[in-house]
Image (cartoon, helix red, strand yellow):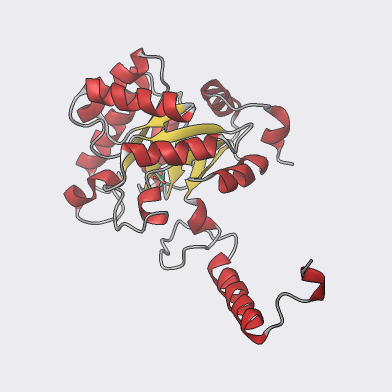
Length: 272
Ligand code: KIV
């Protein structure tokens, strides 16, 4: 059993800030369904992100843009039914918070009410400040997301490392401060230079959770399907694969097919 799992019965947004204070790293993984959430929660992962990466991983879209609020709520409510300990954070999908703060609040309320999740995540800094404040004023915890923000992929034009240049790095640092000041309880930093991520983590009191942002931050997040090797075409440098499930599952399915076709399955013990 992990150390954190023993110490904390239930992870809250406050637990995460306390963990940063104590210098304890935060573990975060994605889940989009009940069965996966149950395993991830049982393993002692601190935060489960119902990411809009469900758009890629579950639905097969090229980007995170097409997934809808209803679909995110469906995934989130399945995840919530599978957990007893982890904090569940849900991405507000593209198009459900950018136009105005009232719409952002309506979307956040629907996620909290209809799924039972504990917090929402939004991408961006200064541009969405009023929406973040409006959601927080309603008592809903908000996680920020800066650096490579996949909902803006058509603006960036590429999934390459962000904030390598001074100007973008300065904006990122200012946005991180702004999100902390607005009341966010944590920020995801995606695909930025490790040195910059460490500087941001050191300058804030709220936890910085990195993905492709090096080891100087307060925690790490990965897409579960990537880290267990169920996906196999996505191979960024930051990804560590803990299993090779694409290969293992393919072997199992091939063996099953062989057994069915040869008449080996089911045998006399596998029938009534
Ligand atoms: O949607 C997602 O899975 C994410 C993580 C990559 C941080 O936002």
